[in-house]
Amino acid sequence: MTKFKLEYIWLDGYTPVPNLRGKTQVKEFAEFPTLDQLPLWGFDGSSTMQAEGRSSDCVLKPVAVYPDPARTNGVLVMCEVMMPDGVTPHATNARATILDDEGTWFGFEQEYFFYQNGRPLGFPEQGYPAPQGPYYTGVGYSNVGDVAREIVEEHLDLCLAAGINHEGINAEVAKGQWEFQIFGKGSKRAADEIWMARYLLQRLTEKYGIDIEYHCKPLGDTDWNGSGMHCNFSTKYMREVGGKEYFEALMAQFDKNLMDHIAVYGPDNDKRLTGKHETAPWNKFSYGVADRGASIRVPHSFIKNDYKGYLEDRRPNSQGDPYQIASQVLKTISEVPLSGSASAAA
Ligand code: ADP
Ligand code: MN
Ligand code: MN
Ligand code: MN
Image 1 (cartoon, rainbow, N blue to C red):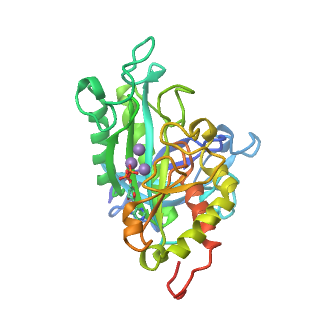
Image 2: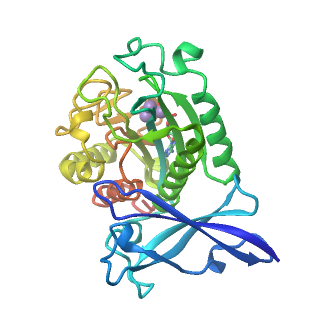
């Protein structure tokens, strides 16, 4: 038997953005535990905005498991928060009730800032560094500093070793701003991996004295870009059947559901989706081929391929909950009838 360190990780009850929480229990298993071998566990919900002090027990239900490469015999356990009965989802547990479909693929582009001493990493104590321009995908000390790359590389390796579908990194438009991409089949799969990648990034940067700032417009109304979490998506039908008529019907439904999408695309998005800095105004839906100033960007390949492939919703922001974002995309898609050979599943 081996003693494994199980890190149970969950989302707390803070609004509008939940925090990641985690605690460790040590348990013996013959080999690396599978999901169904992991027991329910509890925590004090009165300290996480999930219960009153008098009756404060909440239950942690394991829903996904990954090796923890940073710890000897470490296990990362993504959990849903349940009521004391262990079966009723807690009100803060969005994951329990979202739409899911393994045939729908999601690629999230998580943008964020490194923050140190209350400002983006690399910003001087007073004022601003040189304006935006050279930082995006930049190289060299004056563009990316001397520690950010070490962190994003280490994070990439941690994610890959944990079996998370990390697909890439780039330095972003603002100084101190970076992005990583996660791809997954199904909303729960992709969203679990975003949350776990966020967790690994936050835990990793502790030792550097650096925080991750996920707010979508941390520098306010200035000439510094905000952070998004673009949601690239494709259903089986979009990949295999597609067509102009279906695409236009889909876009009409996205237009109709504008406010439902904005409601779950992250807080303060009106401060980011201004029409400037490669964004579309939050209160007007638009789409365009290769247009980074549209709500939804249609890749060239999509048009060339007879309106088949994936689309990029550029509106979700860096602080958004990927569970709710993916679910809303699925909901809108589900409201559009499949044209022609409707036998192909959505
Ligand atoms: P950009 O910065 O140009 O918008 P990225 O390369 O950062 O693009 O991100 C593109 C994302 O699209 C990746 O996360 C990738 O996994 C995702 N993606 C690619 N093909 C598909 C697909 N068929 N369905 C869903 N997502 C996809
Ligand atoms: Mn990108
Ligand atoms: Mn980006
Ligand atoms: Mn993008």
